[in-house]
Length: 359
Image 1: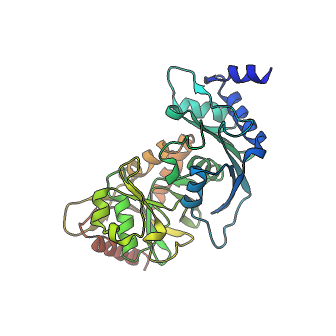
Image 2: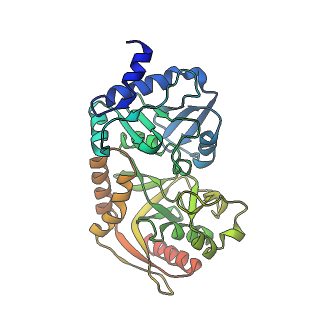
């Protein structure tokens, strides 16, 4: 089949043609190796990653948005990711989805049956495809800046999710706070106060390995959380309440969520720990009272707070995600944190809880 005919045949993708197109995207992105003028070598917990791309906003996002791992990382090989777009010689424009409906679960299942992982964002014809056996991935965009607005805050999140999930670990949509190497996992839907709690803790002497997404490893020895992304976010109200305008040297304009993005190093009291030993799952909520309090929470309610958003935001592996998070909530004691109004008091409550719990 001639290249032009092949490109035409694959211009609108269906479930039937999806695996062939995913393999074509991988082969095309790898085959254009001479067109990538930038390589970012990213060293993360248990993972080395080589990202091949061109200069521009996505390269900048990778440079700013990922937290390099330190210490004994126990890296398990390297994965390679190619960030492709038609501005690179040999790369065709991304195809469009050709069926009337797009069902993410059917999409993921069809690729999984072929031994692949992938995701697709309609509005931008934004494709991400990964071969977990070869540990090679491709991101295909219409242009160098043709990525969804959430990508800079957690760049390469899908690829990290697929690679870690294949090795029994998981990205959790959660925040963290800790002291002395012990920490809590903070889970909850948007608006519950999770991000504000993380920032309040950091501003008042506590540690964190991240907010929004963290890497979780569940072993016989316990649960550990590792940092991946450096970005924190606060809505304008929380930004003012926490005094961030005066504290931060720089911060970004409002993002697609209407929040100010900034970096964890700007507010952390010390360098990020390499990991935290997670001793509890905590679900914050805005209590409305003057003081904070911690009380037991049912595992069912903790699972509802932790699992759905994390699974929905991580393409594929839905069944594996429910198993992982169900096991996590069975293993960890679960609590609800009713938030007071003062950041320093919230931090003191979390600190006291961790000190008592780890004594």
